[in-house]
Length: 243
Length: 243
DNA sequence: CGCGCGTTTGAAATGGGTCAACAAGGGTGG
DNA sequence: CCACCCTTGTTGACCCATTTCAAACGCGCG
Image (cartoon, rainbow over the protein chains, first blue to last red):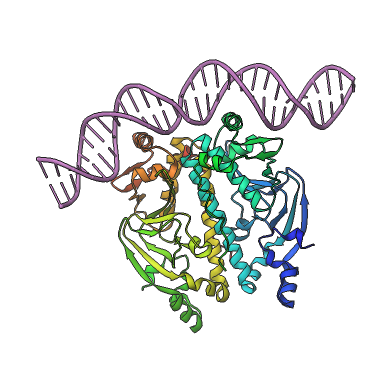
């Protein structure tokens, strides 16, 4: 494993390169159990199932979703490099949602069985885990506001702004454009809109020059304008850990 | 402080009565900084503000909400005894939502400054905190599904079933009835519905005998029937900690 | 008494859902 | 090379669930 391959890892302090002591190094090596490559479409976690492992996304994109009895689907969130997958299963016993890979993904693999050892011996990293969980909760709250209070146009604009910002934050932008490999169906399911209406809304945004999403690439010429339409305060900085 | 007053506290292991050693007792006493009583309408946490304190609800009900620029409000969740308030601010630096008391509330007060000490010296309680955060995330995911995929009638039925179940779980039911001191406005804001439509939907549920909510009390004669209408699988047990 | 808050009800307007059809690839097998 | 199918995106027409607007009711309270 190289330093760059783990740059996005939220548990990067496990990185041996940043370890402080021999003990730390030994611990790190025993906690990280390996890396894994998966193909698009792979289900990483299945709703309702326990998982013996915990993943950190090193590269690639995916999504979290829940499926209802009647076959409808709600996309909970999009998964980006740096995200942690499986904390729920590790802490609560089973996943409340499924996670699947949208593109090829590279994952850092941890053993759930080691989690308790981590809490006992590595309070710093335990704190990081809690932080990640709190951040996730924070974003879910924002999504709730979007679904509960915003119009279709605002929701779509909001989602595009948010995805763009997140991808940019992990360095996946190339002069303003970011990869967006998901389908319109995925976005519709994330926003609680019908596929048809999502399509038409995207069309209107495209026609008005606010956002262009095609061929798996999202381009936002005027971020401020789109954010204004979405009713977002751009000034808010992304959350950072306190300790 | 009596044993019963802390029965619902998720950090109940702090309870001196359950402490295992002299050290534990000393720690507990130093971490818990006191109890607090607040009146209905009190804002316990304000969106965007840091908070020097962390609360545990011992008694009383409240709600979490976010307010948008245009004055709209999204209720994120209802607050019940046993809930933890302010973890976000403690971990991330500021709250992503406001929390306010709906009834009189009794709170257990902790100092945020002690949080890091907790992670270092009490891994068991640190784990509990992470568990609480994961549970919260789990419920937010469920809410997301409700807002994104369910009709107004299903949403209202879902919310009533959920609130009833949560209140029952903390022993606040009296032969089938639970206190429900919130306003129709609060429920509407929680479900992303208009006040008028929420009212009419509640009326229909009442007329069909599925649920009666009046005078601050919720009565569900046939839980299975209401759950069926909401599209909920009643069999799912509430989440419990693993360790 | 009069005022304010929460609830209730009716009527009109509309945003978004549903249905249906088509277009543009890409893959596969003949 | 073509014929076929499957997935994804696109567009138009229609309709209805929900919103918006407006008004009234009951009740507690100063």
